[in-house]
Image (cartoon, rainbow, N blue to C red; front, side, top):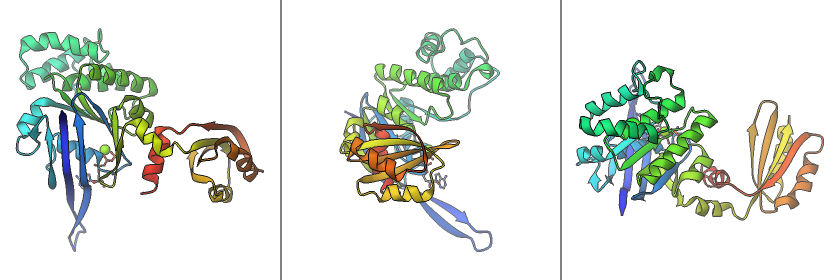
Length: 323
Ligand SMILES: Nc1ncnc2c1ncn2[C@@H]1O[C@H](COP(=O)(O)OP(=O)(O)OP(=O)(O)O)[C@@H](O)[C@H]1O
Ligand SMILES: [Mg+2]
């Protein structure tokens, strides 16, 4: 069964530009997106900044009206049956505010439960249950102002679960969390999965998408460019290995020579403080290393590693060709 269905969804924004000669500029945020999410599935939505992920999520959560196409959530049309949809969904957007910092965690949930019209008898039982589900058991009496960012984000999840929605939309829920906070948050997502929730997750963290998602859609410029399981997406780069070379002050000309090597499929450079990490995708694997090293002669080189491609490498290949 499909819980979320998008068919040819489109959204255009019209912005007024100019002060004297005012004109209207159209931004196509979502051009044409179709996919289906099955009940109980954790579906990842990946794509570069501005790809249209948040706009898509906002249409599915009835916060924005599509310009064309249609979408159904829990079997209800997101425009014509928006109220039915709202009763069955929960959503959080990364970095959002909307908790009362002077109140305790429990009091925040009591407040939102009454706002959402949850029966007090139900919420009395449900609040401690949810606090445990999101890893805040025993912290409910503390003021939210003293919570860490990760704890606040998990309280947001508890808040959005008060009316027991079956379908959750999490738009970059781990943005701004430190590695420990993000890991704790992923545990919460796994708890939600075992509760049989259907989850649509957007993230820029590839390992997170890889670890959590049943299937992933990669979108770019408002269109789906790939849709598969994490393993299926990695097959796009199964012919390649990745050679990682740590360098210090590598000149542009040397990077050019590396790119020009016939068997180097792509080269990306991660800049760190004084060092650069060169990531070469190549079908040759370890055999490429001697020649790469000879091109790098005269440059200070640190660690060299040959590894299997990750989801991130697949993403770079899929999106890279289209940016
Ligand atoms: N309210 C708006 N008015 C005008 N343009 C908008 C509006 N909201 C989004 N856009 C544009 O639509 C495009 C898609 O934006 P969207 O926020 O959906 O991308 P995203 O995939 O969520 O990106 P990110 O990864 O940065 O969150 C961008 O070009 C953005 O500038
Ligand atoms: Mg976004």
